[in-house]
Image (cartoon, rainbow, N blue to C red; front, side, top):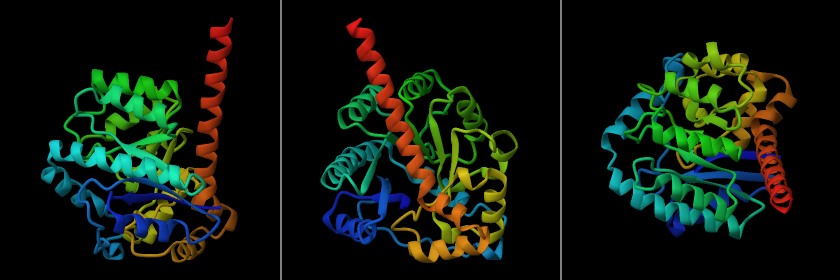
Length: 291
């Protein structure tokens, strides 16, 4: 099974058709959908040639630019629409779409609203765009958020702010083992590898693969192992197709079973484990209440 572990969604019909054409063209494919925070229009591939400077994090400059341009009130309006779009799309295609809503931690009552959305729609996880947030990952409000997420074994895809979040993410990954953390776009992985390469609840997202050099890609897979690596296209920003990305990984990884892990098996295991944990906790609570 192939799972595109990261696609961006907007709320308009053109984007819906583009997503469906990409995600549903193969019966063995699924797609994880997160909001696109920057525009309601489909984006363009990032014009990046990482082989010129193979060790560089090419999304660092891009992330800083987005952070400075962000309007937090506008983000909240966008999120309401796009979260609804993602949830509705997943209900229409439950066997194909894996929904991850976006969270604006600057919004009023963000924790309560997130809890309600996750519970009412049985969502496996959320997307935390911390490169857009004013708050640090380690604050009283965020601590309560992570406590709740840990209690239900939530999956969190997190877009780090590379300037501020590296120390914080190390702490929350170790303090909240019940949460599965996915570091989006490989941001900051070189600074994480010393302390977190063996953390069982940490995974690394490779999207967009065309923006990552062979050198950096090979080193990340070697340090974190194929069992902790997740493929994502970053649609509509990624340039290459799933087949082309698979072929590239096959040249670098050599072992086809490891490529299968990266291209979907790891995601499948994460989702299955989250469902199992949630079911067990619901059953345990039911037995407790009945007793």
